[in-house]
Image (cartoon, rainbow, N blue to C red; front, side, top):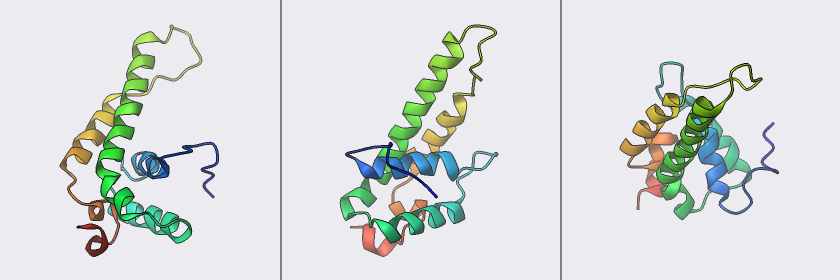
Amino acid sequence: MIDFYFACTDLLAYDVAVCLNAWCFEKDHSFNLTKGRALLAGYTAVRPLSVAEAQALPILSHGAALRFMLTRLYDWLNTPVGSLVVKKDPLEYLRKMRFHRRVVSPGEYGLPTAEWDI
């Protein structure tokens, strides 16, 4: 079960973009379309995306990846030695940003393309 309650309170599609980044990439940094389809099918079964939200998924996903890359970079550079914070590789999200930059359609995330490609 996913609880979006404490997530975004205005641009709800941004939460979807965060989930795409967190759950739909493999260890080799490739996007897993099967996972993307499953995530989006489950989400849209409860709350359908508007055409504008679907069309914004590439830029929202790119922005979400940028946000996590910057947070990780800050932690990488500023976490004191011996801290309980586990530093995570910021370049993981740089690779995701490169993927999102090439996306031209919400269908590349797993949404049915005919409805969104206007």
